[in-house]
Amino acid sequence: MQVSGITSVHMQVMWNRLISVVEEQALTLLRTAFSTSVREAGDLSAGVFDQDGKMIAQAVTGTPGHVNAMAEAVGNFIEDIGAENIYEGDSYITNDPWKGTGHLHDFTFVNPSFRKGRLVGYFAATAHVVDVGGRGFGPDANEVYEEGICIPIMKFAERGKVDMRLINIIRHNVREADQVIGDLYSLSSCNDIGHRRLMDMMDEFDLDDLNELRDFIFSNSLRATLERLKNLPAGSYRNEMTVDGYDAPVTMKVRLDVSEQQVLADFEGTSGLSKKGINVPLVYTTAYACYALKCTLTPTIPNNHASLEPFKVRAPVNCILNAVHPAPVAIRHVLGQFLPDVVLGALHKVLPDTVPAEGSSALWIVQLGTTPIEGANSSASEASQKVQILMFNSGGTGARPTLDGLSATAFPSGVHTMSSEVTEQIGPITIWRKELREGSGGAGAQRGGLGQVIEISANPGHRMYINSMFDRCENPARGRDGGHPGAPGSVSLDDGSAMQSKGKQWIPDGKHLVLNLPGGGGYGDPKDRDRKLFEQDIRRGYITEQEAKRSYGAPD
Image 1 (cartoon, one colour):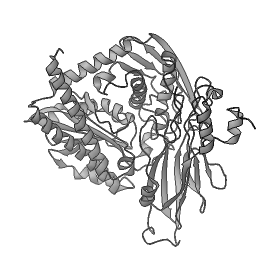
Image 2 (cartoon, one colour):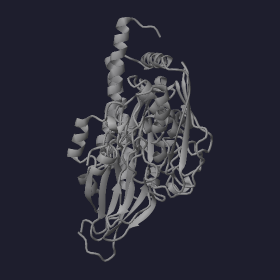
Image 3 (cartoon, rainbow, N blue to C red):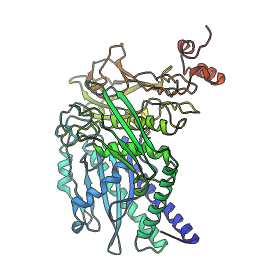
Image 4 (cartoon, rainbow, N blue to C red):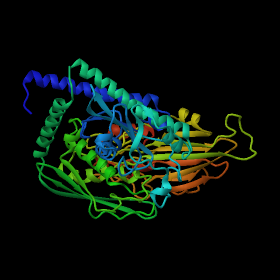
């Protein structure tokens, strides 16, 4: 598309305005959601799409696993609903893992946007809800049917009228009905806010449709992306990583085929399906593999259909990264969030001194359930609380070529943690400790980021169980270019008794749960670390005296 200089400036202004529209859409969801995973942690995505379901713009607020998966999902909605059944005022829903974002706990909503009676596009949003019934959020199911209620692509509302029969079915199949139903309304409403702001924008710029603006965005995004790929050394580059898995280690292998027109990530050779819910649908594999490619190769180009188009992903059917129905996929985030590290290891061979060392990567999501002890004394407000509690926590990121890793920071998901004070208001638990874990960052010229120590117990009169879904307990984050690995994670009781890193487990009465989150790998030879940084680490308690002597060669 050729445009004049003044038209190009005009288009750029509208492009920026469109991004602000979807950002307000996302912030509306953030401010109206019931679940702490959305309103506190920002585990969501939002975007605007053309009439064919191609993403024009996404909100900055949100996670790549949701955004990039949602980029493929909207086309599924259009196909399943049927163009002839799409009306003004509609709102569509699904949590189908293979047509949405990879597991049942994520609900995606799509609302058509009409202007003067004509369809001009769609708004879509995704959020993680606290419960979908079944076994609860954890890895123990043997097939997806055990993991909770599945809502196929269908109408949440038609011509503005909500289907209360659907609401009633969902309400009677989840443990936290008020939170879940509230989040569903928030998802639909934020799409409506996006539509209203889009209409304001189109009024202001006198637009009847988005086609010309879409073409400008797509043509410039694709051109800029291909210009970056043109400067890469063509060839094939490989990497592999082994992580803990459920009851056996999992190996993920990638081959990057780099050319001027595209980068293909092929996961041939990756481990086969697990019997438990750590399997990953291809839509989620694609989301995080493309994220690693894009944030390394084209980080400044806005995310949309055209800027993602040159990045392709392939994985053998029913390998653990391309699980098909009815495989259990509840905690697909664990392996999925390792994929950027797998891909970055191959990109290190394409662009040395560019990507970080491996990090803790997969969120340490704490899903707790509490139940009252019959006959026990407890406060009136807690006496009948049987509650699901969700917390997002992060270990350390890998060290970068010229900077230390970030401590207790979520990469690649980008979500926030929930504050202890807010979490303690959700249910009858006490969080006794959340502190940086001394010595957990891998040694290096640049040190890996630190993990955390988290200690939790049920309040008097209650029992507590955890659905563990933790990794890097047996296979810590590897360092790069001479850097040392980060510390592995561990799950235990406060008396030192070890617990399993995956699966549902009850915490014995009177005991505390203690989580030691893993650290990120170091970058470069520890002997090359700047002396001032080393001394600062000692003062701040980031490294132990033993590590200072063993890894950095400090004198006795």
